[in-house]
Image (tube, rainbow, N blue to C red; front, side, top):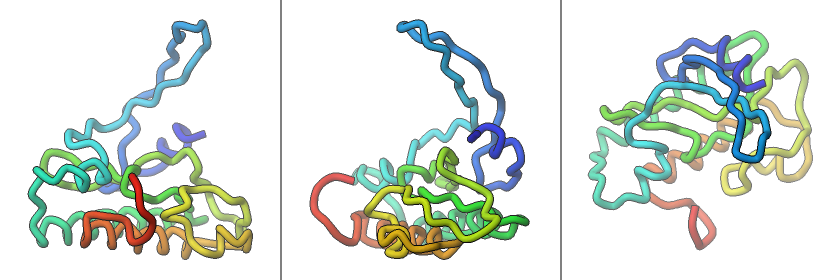
Length: 162
């Protein structure tokens, strides 16, 4: 589960698991809630859409570096952790514009090459879309799309919202 994986991850650019609790919804369903770091500015995707939010090139560079350091940590574990849904909405931003990787719901430890299709199409590597085997390189592709977003404040292809 996401909470179990998060409990094993400890890095300044990965959201920290603070706790887990159960909640009964209005429909009577039991839900598990994950309590993590509070990231004041929300997601990087939201920050990039908000044109009133000034982002200097130095700030954008630091945001890109923060995401890269978090990803390097995930991929350096043994076995590596594949995020499998790295995108600007899953990168959270604090009040100092520091970025942390979040949403590990699709993540898994890579023991062998993977073929499961998952992720968000605009950020998904071609090998994943083609149903081929993939590894940490798929996360690197997604990171490249995030870099484009940081530079252009838009996705590199396709019209519409993101």
